[in-house]
Structure formats: C-alpha cells, structure tokens
Length: 185
Image 1 (tube, rainbow, N blue to C red):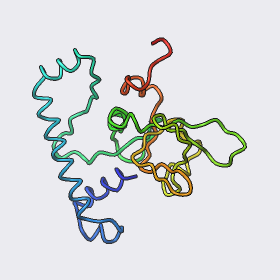
Image 2: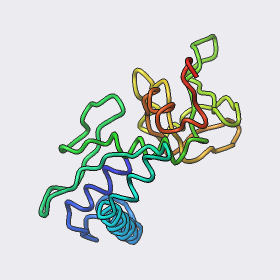
Image 3: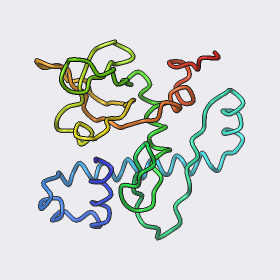
Image 4: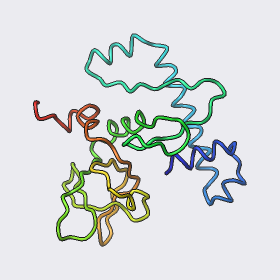
C-alpha cells in the first residue's frame, strides 16, 4: 500500500496538489523520493564494482537481482508475495526479499485456526501472539498469508502488527539463514 502511494505520487510528478487531494503529506513523499534517489545511486555504484559483488557472493552472501530501469521508463509497481500483480509491470519480489533479509527479527507465522476468533500470528523473535492491525489492507485478505514481515508491533489492549507485507516461506531460509534453517540443516 505504501509503495502504491509513492508510485501514484511519482506518476503525478510530485504534485503537491495531488497530495492535498489524497490526504498525504507532500514533504514526507519528497523525502522518500530523495531516499530512493540515494539508494538507486548506491545500487548503480555497486553494479560498477563487480569485484565487490563477487567477494560478497564468495562469503555466502545472498544477492538480490535488481533490473536496471531504462531512462524514461514507467515508475515501478509491486507484485504481491504470491506473484499477483497489483499495478503496472514491476516485480516486487526483490523488494520483499530485501525486507525479509533486513527485518529477519520481525517475521510472524500464522497460527492454526482454533476456537479463538480471527486470524492470529506468532512473532518468531518474541513468541508473542498478535494480529494484523485492522487498518492494514492485509487484515481483510482472504486467505490470510502464512508468513508476514512487519515494521511495527503495537501494544494496546491487544497486540497488533503494522507495516505488514506477505512473504513466501522459502525466502526465510534463503534470505534470513541465521534465523531460519531447512529441515536438512
């Protein structure tokens, strides 16, 4: 959802009137644009240094393949973890895989259905029983994803996850091997 907002902002050519009409803060999206530019610049520098990439691969590091966007190309749009396209033609898998790698301590697994109403998850690190916050579009998804990565754990009268994205189980062992191991390991 956040990526869709950013993409719509970029398609509106960073128009502040668009932000006002869509009830989002222009300054925050401008800052996100700057951060994106810095990340693109860093990725381009890394691509220009193949020896560094080879060294990282030799150390067992997992690289995420990012396709270079041609000049004048349309802004990137995400796909869900299951591969269903949200909008546009961008494959969000590399972004979601980066989230798994970067937020490996913030992963939650869906718990089996029991007499408790609603879908519950268990955080891998803390072992807390939580739910996806009702404000998240994932909270209304049917079926709910088996694994999620989250940005925020909100403790109120209930425990909620916010900033949630669905991820594939096989990514856990591939991109967070220190936290997740295959049965053979």
